Image (cartoon, rainbow, N blue to C red; front, side, top):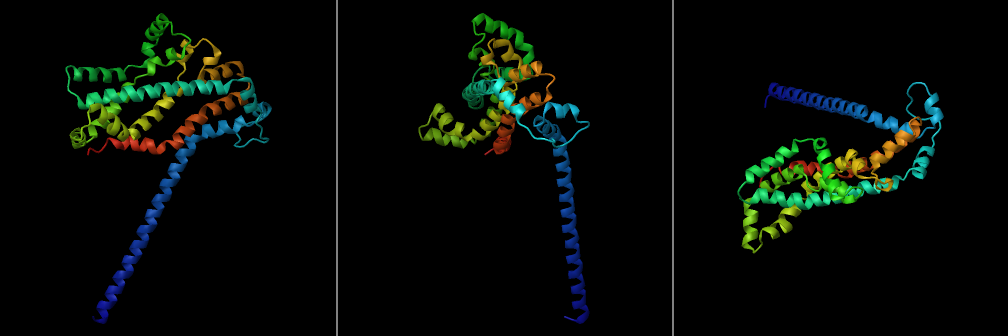
Length: 298
């Protein structure tokens, strides 16, 4: 190789290395800008929660006397939380909310999965009509049926009972639709192989289809937790005794009775938020798996 060619090769390599360095710098800059943008959005969304948490550790006098918005309290105190746990049966309210969730989601897992499996694998008269009715039921707001449901529950004598508080949520149209889409994504060869091995429809659903749908069921259960945990109107109509109130009703009564004491109200609000945050923190992977589990067939 001549000297001029060698010089050209070296120049080209230098140019390539410089271009690669510039590309790496641009990639890092883009990542830094993207991270800064995401961090800013996260701060904007979380700022009300963080400020509520901060003000819940302040005395009522400091909240009233402080001018403007300060990030941290001057003197940290847990008196608001102590007062809420002593004078408000928070644990009873949380127990009732969790009991409602367990009963409703447990029932939805059984009935919705069986119904979805039937729609996905069986052929029967009126199948399309019934499934369209389920889709139509998803579009009806729950508030529209509150009066008729209440009159029916009252007629059955289920007022002030746990079954009366959860009976309207034992089956979910969204759960049926979600699980049906997952069961449709299962390969037909899997069921054919199970049938050849002597496994019937019930056995295939219980031993194969249901275990495979655990990520979808988990994501559905997490979303349902937020819906059931935030229920207010229906439990308020059905429950007549204070020991049957859910956490939302109890905290609303705290707000009505202690409307001037912002520290107590914020402490109660933080206590309400903690279970939802914990569920989403520990259930993120199940939400993602549930979203993509039925996206690819086979």
